[in-house]
Length: 470
Ligand SMILES: *[C@@H]1O[C@H](CO)[C@@H](O)[C@H](O)[C@H]1NC(C)=O
Ligand SMILES: *[C@@H]1O[C@H](CO)[C@@H](O)[C@H](O)[C@H]1NC(C)=O
Image 1 (cartoon, rainbow, N blue to C red):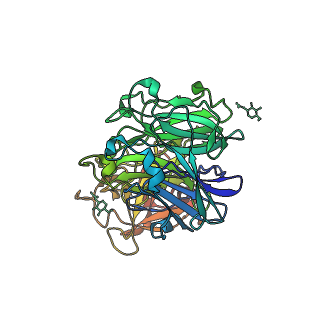
Image 2: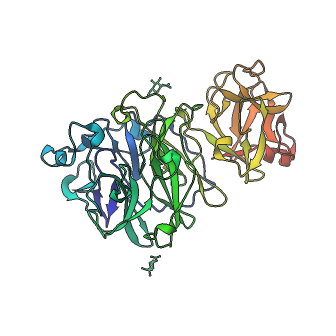
Image 3: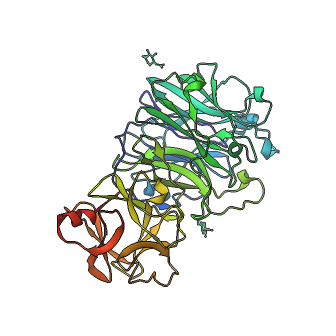
């Protein structure tokens, strides 16, 4: 975790299994917001990723390295730029200190505690770092994944720790106000335990929490279960002005909100943090996942938890929709109707096509995300539109109706599934999609909300043929 504390740049670090970065940025309300575009994998072999946009305009990145032996930082002016940014080792494991806290030789029995180092200087990559020692908690037990946030003027630390009163080896999430970056006001309280079956696969785990405040509530995704393909993200939330030290203030989702997805080939997604897009308008979900399901041996010995980033969408009721872990490659978009800003292009929930498309409101993000594949099947200058939740299934024109159908389907041809993306017909804002093989016809909604490929006559139809990308 990397955080600004009273204007001094300092890093608070829970080393080893959970090296985390956090900040409490205040950015603009985010929905609806313009599209963002990133290419996944963002950073190879970096787990538990955290990206902070500091007031100096730079994005700073840290994560857990597969060797668990050092603290790394990168910075870049853009999020994608972090992919290639030079990586600086700001701290190496000091054996005389750090090994004291490990049960060495038995990797499964890491006996770890949260430590803090403090760096002074404008740029954390070149700062002087000093160790501030262990963060004392209620118990002297296995503890990791510290994160901080400010609510109602108080800075809190949340972390994962083995609660000895439970009698099992798992971890719960604890919370305490902070007196300074290395001192808590104890006792801490347990705000979540691994209680649901999906939190108790392999190991009983709640860890990797991170907070975002939106719409009067604090949303705290956390990760659960073993770090293999069972790893998944759950969600705690509380009113921003509630008494956070009362565990009853925290509501917990009974189901994971973000989990392995066989169709997109993303496995064990989790340990997220949030950052904000370059234009400040989109909230971004930064997490790790593997792109294959089978991990042999101890998953923590496997280095292929890669850093990924994708947009968070906010529902009309103010709650977040993290969607699905999208496939490797360019991130997808949603297309919001110019004529009715509550409506998005949506395919059926099940895919497996062919299914006709509609404009629909209040649909889950996973039913409304499309990757713009460029060039499209018809070559340079064209695009094809692929359902994010069903890679290999594309929008096509079939007898004037827009369908989602597999690429191999006989009616999914370069002529039927390639479009030319142009400036929005309605007023130049947004985009419109002309059929590449008949550019007088565009993808547009009908008043009955069915999506068609048809000529555009007049303003009403131009509006129905214009979409904002989000
Ligand atoms: C929020 O902060 C105010 C001012 O410090 C304090 O009076 C109030 O008790 C706090 N609310 C909660 C729920 O802690
Ligand atoms: C996973 O990603 C790597 C690149 O990081 C790639 O070489 C490999 O083919 C991908 N595997 C799958 C199953 O997609």
